[in-house]
Length: 81
Image 1 (cartoon, rainbow, N blue to C red):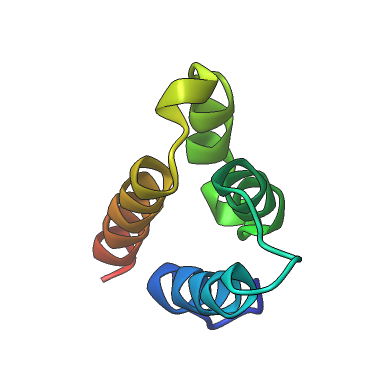
Image 2 (image 1 turned 135 degrees about the vertical axis):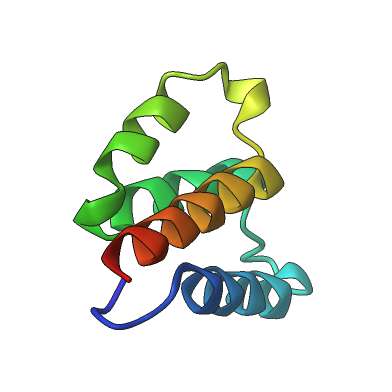
């Protein structure tokens, strides 16, 4: 994740790539997307990433991870205002 990029923008770009690849032999699984998000998200989300990594794999859906990261970003922005 590049500095200055919002979580929403970052996840949207990953999901756009996923949609492009979905029609090819190179489709990406939801598990791969979640793993990529958790590995590449900004260090400022380390606590949230740690919590998400410790959840059962069936709870680590793209939607659940997206919501958790967006909520954390909202809290971080509010703290900095």
